[in-house]
Length: 292
Image (cartoon, rainbow, N blue to C red; front, side, top):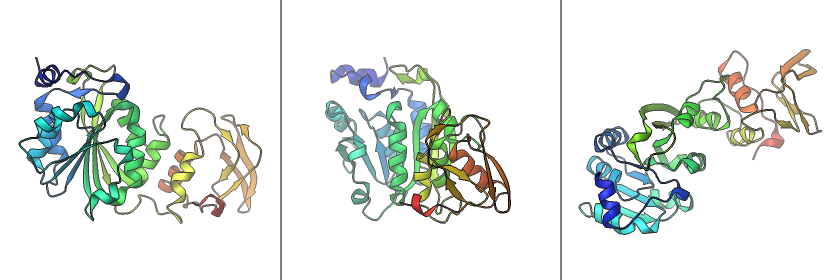
């Protein structure tokens, strides 16, 4: 029986599937992930979803300062017992999404680490990007499929809104693929440990950085989109009023910049926007009405 199962039996605990609790049980794997996560050991580490502290123990050995956050109050006794040898570790029993990261940072930047619940991955990543001024690097365990989406190239089927947002502010890198058998209880899918290095400046130079996240929310990440405005890359404007479904063959037949524009309207805005920025086209101007 693994140490985590012994701890669960001792404290009469059980994983809460409603909270997406799947715990890593391979100590050798946890040690490898801790070494990757704490490559810059001088930075304080913030762990999201500490559980009963089995990953926290490995992190505490490799970092100067550790702050752990756990939502499930039933895990608090086991978590405090596991970290008793590291009294300087701060334990917070609360939902990370309610945490005031700015106040906790105290002028420092965190190295964020976490085995994230799969259902809350997008919400947590989005919040960390919102607070990127207080984050140096994000090291998280997510579904393998999600990790592949985060590192996807523009124009591929895996590229979507979250990909666009993540690659705009960070440099993602998959560090290790984790089989589902490494978890307790065993999930249906494999996972991946991915690093998101926060960039000092967005990866693309735009007129208004505040506009980009909002633009990426205007369109769905999958399928055909209801469209109330059509983006024309040649003159950087958004046109059209009626909401309608756009087929894969719909194009913008307008005179733009002195010549006919045939830009496919059905392309997802985040993907096309990033394609323009990384391709041979000039960076489009942002409509002032769409700025936050």
